[in-house]
Image (cartoon, rainbow over all chains, first blue to last red; front, side, top):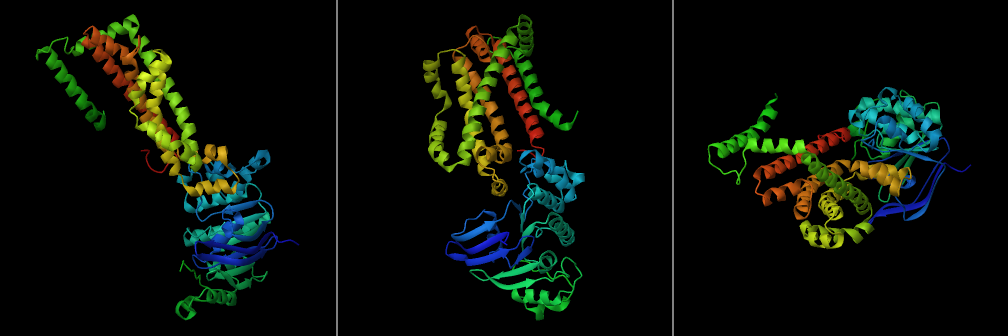
Length: 249
Length: 252
């Protein structure tokens, strides 16, 4: 079966700095893959290539069906209410009729008529999520969607995203620098490192452990942290079980 | 009454007092400066014989038409220039050069082309109002958050739709500031246009007053111009406040 996202031999550089050289990635239909890496490792650039916002110098990228994209910031049109922001990308009656449903799905029914300036960070990101779902995308691209939120909101929205991916059956590509987020949301985690970026580690999360916050994934967690270059002797006082988060290095 | 309003009224009232004093006790002659009472009387006469309304209506119509033309053209050109580097390269240098021409320099040409009728006046007013709207809109579009444009791009929204749904709304604060300045300019150029050749309007009242040495008529016209300018500016501010509720801060 053809993968939902196929990245084949993609190269991209900014000036003299090669971000990718001959990079490959395949995401199967219905799979959630997390690209994990420190800031500046090129993971967002890869996602932007998949989204069509950045044109790679060479290689081929194929994405199945409509794309939904959530950025790091909500990027709502400040002059439109939540409802109108969600309807922003709706084409035709069928999609317009979905507006209420997707707002319900992200849990914003009470704020449908509110302007973005009156929304909290978490609510705004929920609205952005709803907007990305309006065209019933087959593929959901998430570019560090939760990294500007505080810890509690993050957990809450991770749960919401997991539920949405499950309910819609979307294929998802998540860019994050948060090991726990990757372990919670993804079926497969690809660690990106180096210039040009290479996949230095690939971890598959056992289906049984998937999407349980309390799953004992100590080995996976330690492997991922090592791959990210974290000195476990120095930071592992809280491991295992504690949330270890890597703020941009 | 709120303190601010009291403070705002202090200076006009002081001026009125000084004016009344100068024309009564101060010995200033009526052909140099009519008294406040004269002006009020003149206002009453003009209102009663209908001339006030005829002149006022003529001026308001000219300003409205000239401003509307300027707004429409500035919206079209400003959006095109702001969105497309190619259009900008083709148009903006010329427009900037034209902007450097003192607008009154167009008057002789306009009179030759369009005669002394309404057209020349409306075009002159439009020229005056155009540039502030155009310049502010282009600057506003330059300042539009690139990230919002990217959202539209993701959804395949381009060209005219992009302008209508993202760029112009995002540049609306700047556009409205430009429109407010443009409207003030329109009143300025109205007087210039009406001083030259007209048989109606507030500017005509000014020339007529000068020719027959009626300072009360001149002052009445000035008073009406101040009132119209202030009212239209306030109206624009109200409009700004209503349209820009979505902004975080207060509109400029």
